[in-house]
Amino acid sequence: MTLYTKNEKETEALGRKLAALVRPGMVIALYGGMGAGKTAFVRGLAEGMGLKARVSSPTFTIVNEYMGEVPLFHFDMYRLSGCDELFDIGWEDYLGRGGVLAVEWSENVDGVFDGDTVRVRIERGENDGERRITVENLTGFGGGEN
Image (cartoon, rainbow, N blue to C red):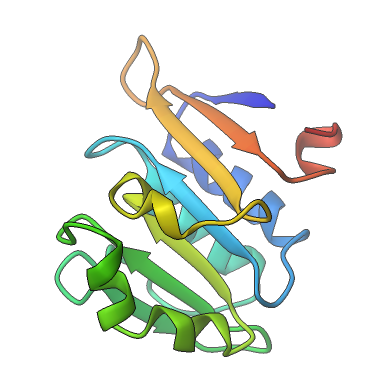
């Protein structure tokens, strides 16, 4: 399914909407270039999950943990060169902690995701702030099935 947003607030709102459908252990792989809106999407996701944290890109820390009833583990794979490095930072441990894993720059570690992974592709639109957001493998998001 493909959805369109006109600004950052609408991109965050889509993240909040997705939060109603998350479950422990879910992996959300985010794809998109620099400044596409991946962190804005995760900011909305965290808010929708009831997390009161200041969400920022974990580019230098690799992962930010936002604790709540269901924790959110926010990864940024920009600096990783492949799947081996992901396992070195404890990926499997995070999978077993019962949280939601939101992964920016998923194209750098695409080989670790299985068929249950929700994929969110964010592309810039024609005008500043506009985004084309494609959600794959999440039934019920946006009112339809995919």
